[in-house]
Length: 430
Ligand code: HAM
Image (cartoon, rainbow, N blue to C red; front, side, top):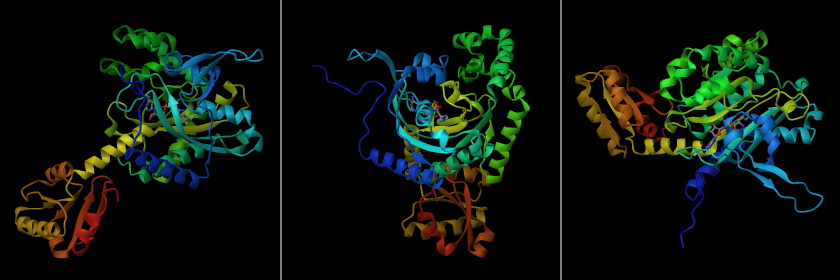
């Protein structure tokens, strides 16, 4: 008899890895509590219509990736119903918001969730058919301030804090605005026209998208298509004044809070409910599936599924990808030396050896560069072999204060020589 295995695209999580999952979830819950979010748990399956109307019939998720079945009637009183394992949780949360009349409280609803989602995608590293999301939604009637750009900025600032507290350094926040639904419809037409003259040279998927949903051409990953896509009109030029003002207010608040971001004009996201702000946090350590999380505003979603007007914004993080990133960062730091000493000039070489001896005697692993190295070369060599670089020049020798840079955080610190060993022994995330 052939042995039974977990279904393709699903997997078992075993100790010790599960400890990391628990740590991530505990950190997320603690951060959400500080921002006054409460937990919501919705069913893992819903009426198929919810996703068709909410996420959009034309999207890859709904048209190709859902696990859908006809649930047979068990009694005369029951009807056969098409059900779907949730491919994402935003539509379910908004359905619950409508069903439980949460808008009638007049309060902004701040809800978070942690749980499995299901998409029939081609499995690869970081992409599974059952995966877990940690997400949150901020939704409410307009009078609760749900449409304010401050909500967008606060959600993004919370995410920056959460990733930092998880120890995920090196994330990049990519930000864009897809405008109102009218702006998007206008842009779709602009794109359709622009694509007419170039689409014959593009991949088969793009040729189909140019007909059905031109916006999706911007998601194309085929390398040969990229130069063509770069020449297409940008959605920023199709935004109305209100959407431009909203976006400017989001970025101004992020600037004030010191949250770095880059504008990505192509970030239109693969779900149809988005309006105005869209974003992703990416990490280079993930490879092809580099999105740690994605989200955006969805001011028309509640109405699209039969509810009252209830603007909202939210995100979902791929928990599997958080785990992968943390594992990669950990193994990178574990296999590296504690410090790389960079002598500035050959005359400092002997002092570098003396310092290395001092530190090695205290149990630290240390590499030494060479005073003939230019500073840039020292930094490159150090980044490959050690968690931190210690700069040692004549000034440092005289003053006894050394400059240390921690690569994981990018932070540069002045450390008195007597405290150097203790400093270098600390985890590199600090
Ligand atoms: P999404 O971009 O489809 O957005 O998914 C969010 C995150 O879930 C992705 O960035 C990725 O980390 C993770 N993810 C998606 N598919 C997979 C997969 N097959 N395997 C592993 N991880 C995956 C949403 O789901 C929206 N509901 C986000 C949102 C909330 N927008 C507003 N509110």
